[in-house]
Amino acid sequence: MTDGTAGTAGTGTGTVAGLLLAAGGGRRLGGRPKALLPFRGRPLIDHGIRVLRDGGCATVTAVLGAAADEVRAATPPGAARIAVNPDWAGGMGSSLRVGLAALPDDASAAVVMLVDMPGVTAAAVARLIAAYRTGGSELVAAAYDGRRGHPVLFAARWWPDIAASARGDAGARAFLAAHRDALRLVECGDVADGRDIDTPDDLPRLGGPEKAG
Image (cartoon, rainbow, N blue to C red; front, side, top):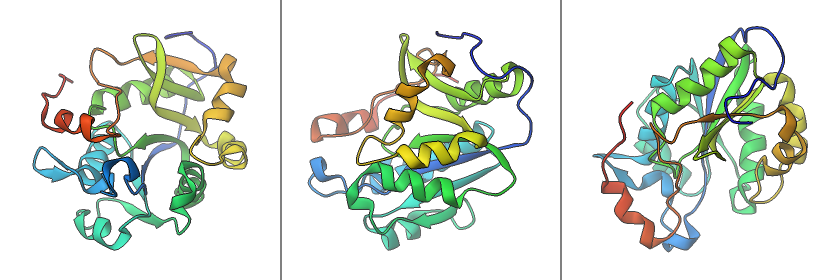
């Protein structure tokens, strides 16, 4: 239910961590790692970290894989904790497991974001965190015209279940499907663009205008 009240009653406390999944090799882009694609004068890895930070995440952990050394070099020093997934070619599920295991011990929730979504804004991240803080929702996803998208916030108590179900390229899809009744959707279509960069036809969006917020 969009902007519904599903979730645990009360206010979400503790720090919220950001988790940026940036390990993919860009197979459908001819092997160009998406984390290194330029966007507004900086690589997507840098942009994604800034969005999570500016949206209210206390820390950001970035999961690298393809061209990890090159991506690490493109990441501003000290901007994010780095975790490397040696099995990145196996799909997003393995990167999600690596990332969840690398999050700070004091984090009570995490906003999981994909590096290939340049249209996601800090305002969208802030809306998810607000739903967690003030609405007590433990599972929150951005929605675009009412349809679930990214990023997604998971309270820490769900991380083991998410890691156990993350397989292949599906990431947390199976977990979210199994917990759809507890998932709160927060509309973000007015402040963000939920489309990803997947094929060469999508590349022109890297030069498009940013939504307000």
